Amino acid sequence: MKRIFLLTIIVLSVIGVHAQIKSFEIAASKVYENNTRTSYLVLSGNIDEEYAQIIVKELESNEEIQKFSFYDSSDLMKCMFTSDKSVTEAMIVDMINDVFYHNSVENRTSGNEFVKSYYENGQYMVSFKFTGIVDDDMQKEIYASLKDTGIFTNIIIQDNSYCELYSASPIEFDFVSGIIQEWEVVISEESIK
Image 1 (cartoon, rainbow, N blue to C red):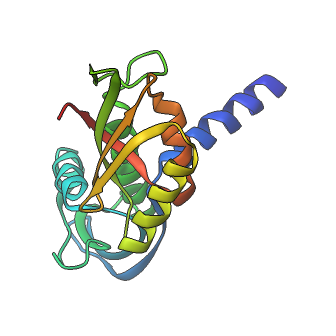
Image 2 (image 1 turned 30 degrees about the vertical axis):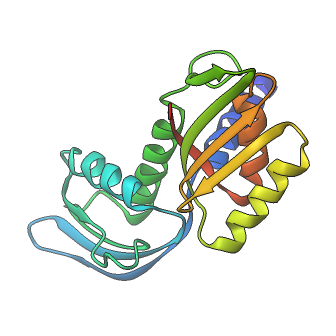
């Protein structure tokens, strides 16, 4: 019994680390006679344009959800959905966080190094997209934390969503992920420059 409880705690912790929606408020909700529900939510967390598109696609592929959208393109924290009345607002938020979790780890394989890394002239280089940086101050804090490790010979962060790291030694995914996790930032896609 203790093992099951411990396993449950570990699984929930891992999912919680990758969750990008921390809470939500119901702005409006109505259940109709045809057994559908339409709800407007205000989310608390971080969603960028790329993830917004993935979330819409994933949620609308669910047969119980007729419509899902971020109805204010200038504020991706506002969304609405129409679904079977059995689908609750909390279930929608769980589905959104599932999309974050699965898309942040889908490019990972076993091992600790980045899947896509490049080596040239004695330097290892990795580049990746991430979600969660909300402003330039946060970007500067992350840059400073990466620099303070003394491991990286060059760090480039652009547009609050793209990063390149250079090092004389292989760059570990878990190490970088652990640093940026302090700001609830998640590596969403590795790439090669």
